[in-house]
Image (cartoon, rainbow, N blue to C red):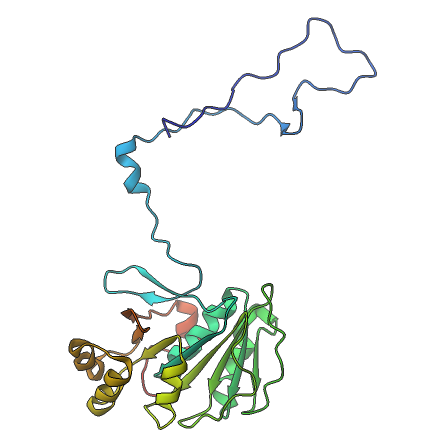
Length: 260
């Protein structure tokens, strides 16, 4: 930029007398800073043009899709504090989240009673490394999550998931998948830091609206959401997000769908 400090372009000056034979060569050295690199023409940007350099980067986390303005929507699942997420939606979206979370370097543990629908993903994820593991319901061992090895536990346990043996904790988030609104939903929604809702029936939309204190417009839109669209909401904020699969995700999971 034009206002930045300019690094000196001059090479170290040669001494008037030749260096002694035993002295180390210092012609190209800069004490403590390494060798002098090549000199190139400076690149300058006028202050009025700085806004054009803005990048669409949000918080750290997993890019779950794009919002209504086409900006990346990011879900921060790797946190130093317990983080509970409930998704009332389809298996496809939960599996995309699993793949993208694993791609960030986190481990993904899936607690499920239908391991056959997760086995292909577990084998494909991680390029041969076991970053996605499957466990029967109620048989998830301690994960040993840490800042260097965060974990996302996905609970795919049907309409009435039992209380999990492995709870959310530092660097270990838990996502519970509900295919539809169930008797367990009020407790889960109340305890969740984040709730995702995909297409539901009008009756379910009204119940979710009351539980999450959604505006009327959001409640009316829930029964009409397209495949791959999720309303992500917290106690203070809400956002519609379209999850668009990559070619790899489409090849492994197929096109977005709400019903499995």
